[in-house]
Picture 1 (cartoon, rainbow, N blue to C red):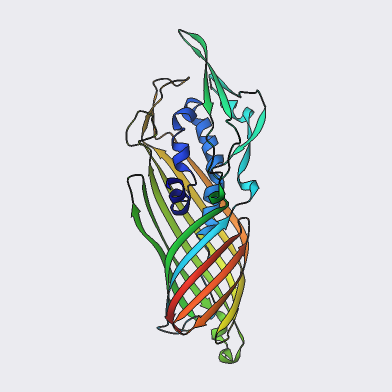
Picture 2 (cartoon, rainbow, N blue to C red):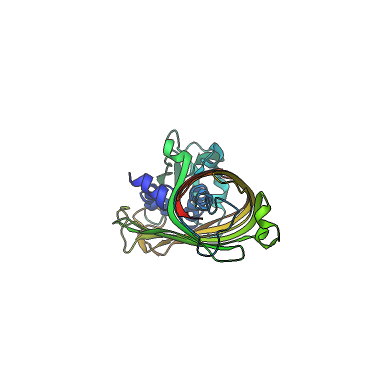
Length: 343
């Protein structure tokens, strides 16, 4: 349940799993822990940025002045096999100047495909950290790399939120979405976003006679979350992982203008960045950094810059509407919306 909650709400994909291995990863050096964590989390955070940008619209026909709609939206980005693993090259983990220890795979491979947060290692993958102790001489530590979720839940990166839309005039419509602040002993999460849709066909003299509407949309979404790492098993204080995700969506939309059922689609561009900071103090219990105290050890980030195509349909039954849509991009995504409104 904890893993599913993290995946759905924070998009940090198995942050809880990697938290259990923070001690071991830091034994392989701060830069190496940062390098691995960045590759490990990237598929989850990038998929999240696609999932959180679905269902910003269900028509290109902007609402008139005072027209409104309240929506409950459920979304998911789909994960393919290529998002579940990455190539880990051991030379990269021995490349930092001044590093006085070496890292190797237990089987001496030069590189290996290892699980991301959304994948699974079929068996343990171990790193051997070799270093010189001033008293005991050459020593070795074994670090087992964290596996990912690796079950059916990892094929989807879901999000859900509440959204409102309000018509202004002359083809302008404003939108807002949010996830109510969620706090538990382990996770603290919040999300909000705002958008502006402009219908260009409203500016034409024959607008009411046209069978289609064409509009543009710009939308911003922000998600922030904190995961408590004090149960990770490593000594220290105020240990936590803080994540901050910001995205922009630019979308061109076209839709039919029929009384009951309509179809819509468009071409869009998603630009976003997710940053995660490992914060607090960490006292290393073994390895080449034995007894060192690390403060705010590292930060990792990932970015998306993807074009996407959208197709969807909307059924309108008076005050109640339902819509479904599908997005084609680096992470395909789908969404279902229950909508209540006037016009």
